[in-house]
Length: 440
View (cartoon, one colour):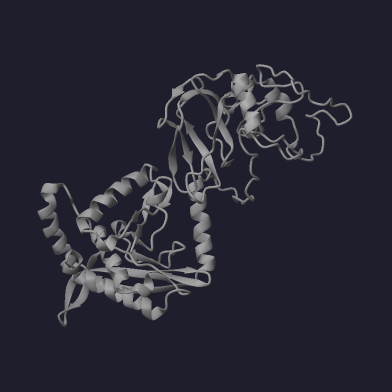
């Protein structure tokens, strides 16, 4: 009997995901390790690999389906000696899926009324158009698209497993007169529970546009997670902000010397690489800031793992330099470049962005002078650095022009007192202005 392939939990916090793209089709043979699909989690778009060898006999969740719960059957695979017919796959899906919860709904014109509806036979035949004797068989995504376009699903021939109507079937269809004329306020019938994908979520609250032209873009899972976590952070964490001005001239000089020495190895240090190292060493020097508030306890970490904010096409993500305080700046540079590339491609693995003891956000490359960053819970601090620029500055007791950068630490005041935060900022400033300590 074919084996059910279920929506995997690709991260410890994942409860549902979007099946962004299928890389296989019905009839394809796969072996262990082959990439079958791309799944969008709350953090990144990740590749889903086959565990067993076999033939894909059905795809039960359409490409683009959102909100697919972990554990939902998304496809069926048959082994070498197993029956690979669609009927056998459908039977296996039914066995793998939990029994649907009964849903009470008011009858509407599109469905048979309770008085004349015959009980559905166990062997009710399905047709190639995606219809049984009693209802249209379509994926939730196809139903939602059809409702938006005013398309009558009963007039569409399904091309999915067992004649199921899928997204591709309704994309090119046009609205039927019957559907287009239906009142907009008509109540929607409760659809039977589906194995292929969960029911569509309620629409977001309506926001007035005041007649201003706009283009709406649906939020992906990553952007939804960013919005939720930042809102929680600002609502639940009492932020305190501490800013210092840091002279960069010595650091820039050392960077030039190091890059000349590392040129043969193909390594080119950025200022950000050195700042990662400086923040990590400062946290080790001031352990009262290398902490996390955990309800009724305070956790003090023995190493500094620095989460570095990276702007990816799908949204902000923070890959982690683990134990940055003990790594050389060249190792940090190589690792950071690889992580940033993976972040921009949406290929980071959970262990590469989950965790961290503190964060660094650098907007200096955009000419931003100074800003306050939002803490990334459960961390207790984040350092925001701006651009290094020529400013009047007192050097050796005399006014001069120096390259100066403003750095602002955001601290969770439940876990870190102002004086301890100030000591961290002082240690960071000292390390940057006396940078030989970063390579010692």
